[in-house]
Length: 370
Picture 1 (cartoon, rainbow, N blue to C red):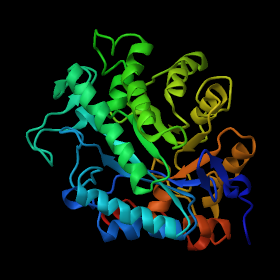
Picture 2 (picture 1 turned 180 degrees about the vertical axis):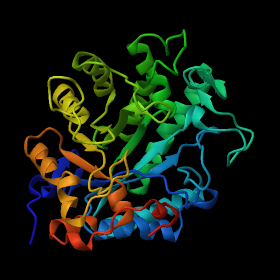
Picture 3 (picture 1 turned 135 degrees about the horizontal axis):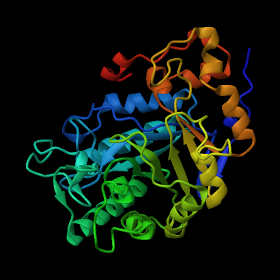
Picture 4 (picture 1 turned 90 degrees about the horizontal axis):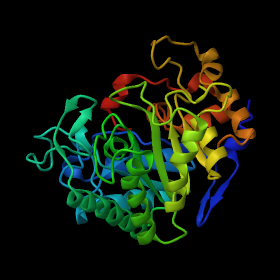
């Protein structure tokens, strides 16, 4: 029996971007690109999801051309002839399968530890030399360092457009570099990049503006942001709709087209007194389309590890509530992460009601690429 997924299968248009449906593959670090180069196994990994009907692929985080950008082994780069040639193969494969694709452009900031590839001597770079509040790591960035990173993001976005990508996502979430500037806990600067919300936004705003200048008015820019951090799941950038609106406006003015509001469970309300999640509030206040995300399609609770039966999987994974929220235009797009990592055909199987065939997520799958 075919499930009624309603707005999930409606097309989406923005500028020069047309998506066949509103389901995206969320960015997920995979560590299968030795020396930063995505090979044929990476091409096949993304192609399979596009062949199975996913509308938009957002790649795993891919590092910009700055000495401290990478924090993990075998993460793909987004600079250099060999890495960019690998990404061109990915783009062509996804397009041939009818999908669209954005690279996620990434700098890990103070998450990086010295000794990490590709330059083992490079420190972690951050606004104030802090990995987390009260936990130093690496070096505080000079104005020259800031300018270098802005240029690196702009260069990468320009390359993405030249390679045929359909837009770019800037990783401004989860306690990585851009988020370290946004978060008071890690931004203790006393210059124009620290202090007030306006100042803490400045670095990200300047990156967005530089990217927009390079790619022109019609190439979509998506910004991923989050309240929670890997350093602190309870962290908050904003505590009210009023603060969120102050946060969003400079980013809209700089050129953000889509906000990817990262939450751990899409059904949880963001502020007291409303059922809207972070993506819902962001779309309402910014006037821009948003993408929601958070445990879509999982049959295992993110925290407790409690398993559900196959028969309960649709209810627990929140598909009915997801459809209802999208029908209400709380957000326009939905990203699916681990469910698609585990099962490339998850979307087709759910749509066709083949729930017994869905391959439930298992952590051991993180060690494979398929």
